Image 1 (cartoon, rainbow, N blue to C red):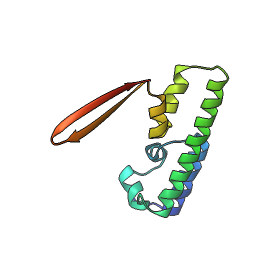
Image 2 (cartoon, rainbow, N blue to C red; image 1 turned 90 degrees about the horizontal axis):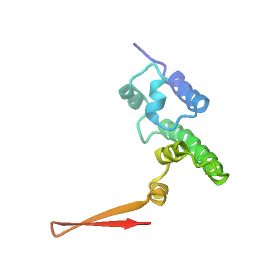
Image 3 (cartoon, helix red, strand yellow; image 1 turned 120 degrees about the horizontal axis):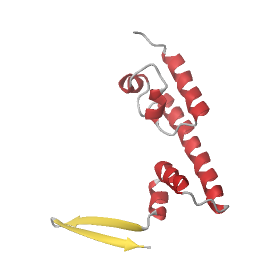
Length: 117
């Protein structure tokens, strides 16, 4: 079955905005194509894929700001923290972690360090 790339791209942008999506897998779930076809149409480093990633990132940022406002207002629901951890950056995840685990490999020896906050 032949698909119109431009229509799929416009639908991708539309569902990102309408459903406030965070991940490319979420976009594909709303499209009449497979993930493989999606990446054939829009290679990871292509302009179209980057545009979609920017829209997803905007949704993540807006959601994180809203969650932080709710937490600051005293809403300490576990669901908010779980959602935040799902969409946050690695640095933000480390800041949220109660303990951090670092490991290094030197001369075929592994060293593991636990740091509690």
